[in-house]
Length: 68
Image 1 (cartoon, one colour):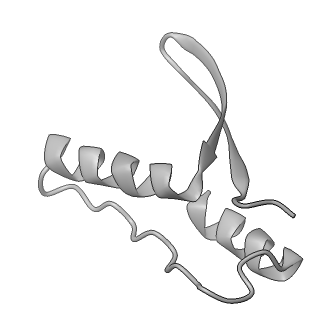
Image 2 (cartoon, rainbow, N blue to C red; image 1 turned 135 degrees about the horizontal axis):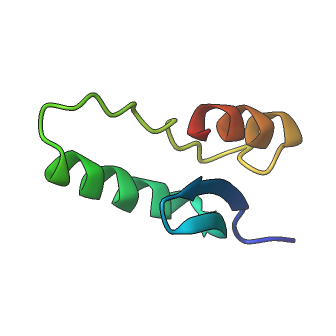
């Protein structure tokens, strides 16, 4: 049984292609960094944590959608 879920992040910027895998908690750190670096810019909320059922396929797919 997996202890955590890994989410794939794909994109590109001025330096080239981005293709990394991150845990859910990394998105909190990333949002905090964006929030402090760009004050006043709207940064969407992170989907809430869920203690039970967080390994269910539907839950993971829904979370991927909102993280995207």
